[in-house]
Structures are given as C-alpha cells and as structure tokens.
Length: 347
Image 1 (cartoon, rainbow, N blue to C red):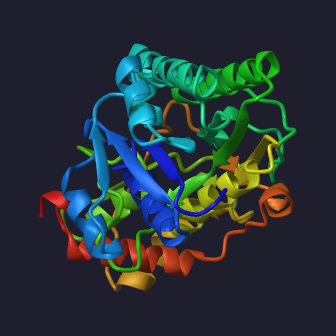
Image 2: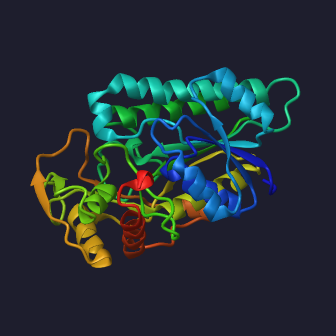
C-alpha cells in the first residue's frame, strides 16, 4: 500500500488498536478510529495526539450498525480495514456466550456487508482489504508446542469459537469473491505499553489477562494476584503462554497491510516463539519494577489450556516481520504505563 492511504481501525481506541494507530501514523498511513468506547476510554485520543502530534480522526459508533460503517468507509475513502472491535475476555465468554456470539460474529458480518457494498459495488476505488484480529485460541488445547498455522483448529471457550467462526466466514467470502484480500493474524498474548507511558492496557473492572492484573497488584490497586491453576503439566505447574510486546504486534499489522497490497491473502501467527509460565512472568515483573507481587494459586479457570506458544516463522517469511522485544522490556514498559497511570486513563 502507498503512504497516506486511509486505514479504518474498528475498535481503534482499544489497547491493541491505539498502538496500531501509532504504528500506522509513523509508517505514513492515515488511520481512522471507529469506536463506541464500550471497552475503551475517550482519553486515549488526547494521548494519541500527544504521541503523534496530530488529533486522531474519530468516528464514534458501533460496528454492528452496517449503514454507519458503510458511510464511514465512503466518507474517508478507506483503502483498508483492520478489524479489532469485539469482546475479548475468555472467562467472560464462558459466562456470557450470547454476548460474544452477538458482538463478535455479528460485528464481523456487519463489517463485511458494509465492505462488500462499498468495495464491490459501483464507484469502488479499492479492492476489499481486511486485516482480521484473530487469536491463538483457535488452536484450542494444542497437542504439542510450538504451534504452526496448519495445526488443527478447535476451541475451548466461546471467545475462541467466535474467532474460529469468523476465520471460516472470511475463507468462504474469499472463495465466493476472489477480489477480497484478507490477512488473518493469530495473536498470542499481547502485553507491554508504548515507551512514552502515555497509552497502555486499561481493562474495565477486574483484569482478565495476566499482565494488567500483575501491574495493578504492584501499584496497590489489588491485594494479590490469583494464579489460576498450579497443577498443569508445565515446569512449575502454572500455565505457559507466548507473550508479545504490543508494539511488535502493532508493527505486524503495518506489515500485513503492506503484504496485502500484492493481492495475496494469508494466515499467520504473531508471537515470539518463546513460552513463559505465570510465575516466570511474575518474577520478571518484580525485577523490572522493584515491587513484590503477592500471589495465591487458586483453581484452574474454565477455558484455559496448559501451554500455548507460537512458531512465528511463517510471519517472517510472508510479512518480513518478527518480534524484537523481550520479556524484560515488556515488563518495564507495562510498569511505566501503570505506575504513571495508576487508575488507567481515569487517572
């Protein structure tokens, strides 16, 4: 893709979306945020302006509103879409499956219908180009690790099920309409924050992911960390995951958009290829922050798996991308964000 093309970020005010906004801006694109702030905070817009020197372009609304999305695509002559919008907590998806099927699958259908009308209809100025925010949860409970893209797909929770269904929808759409250019990015576990400390992960309510819970314990917002399961078949009994710095993840979206300009679609893992246990992350964070993180091992959480980490070699071949930041930098950046913003964007 050529520089200065407008890229729509659905859910662009969220954690990964806001960091991708910065990466796209720095790469010369013109990102446009579509967000209803149901799982993000309007204060991120001021922070993005401070980082980039330019006020973000915002379209406030819900991706489930197809007519609204279509109007946004036309108004900004969008050249490509990165689809982040959706509900994303594994535990919540087990408790509220209908919310996840409605928001995630319904939102994807709405977006695809709007894109079809704009990019495959009269007056189109670009092919339909989409980068989809998928997840390693589509691999279910993998038989072995590291995980390659040709592993069997399954799911252990409704969140992962929605990602799998959307991947299948995208494959069917591409088969029916070959003009579509689709990049499916299977994220592993995003952590860290922008080096400025101005934007970071700011979950509403009790965090569902490890790193924001650890940082909130360290800053004094929560008394201790609950470690879900200490009896997994791993070196220390706690779950092993592939943690990737959010800046590396954001760079993967820029690389994906550029790769799609050639017309070839793809599905790739975005991870580091290195697995760390919960207790390894806790120790690394304590070292980076100089703070103790008290924890208690509790029962396993429904929908979790023992080990999950990537073989990211295909992303390197297809996108020319690889993760560059290690666990120490992930922890240091997460702590800089949390210690400077003890209550997140509401500080």
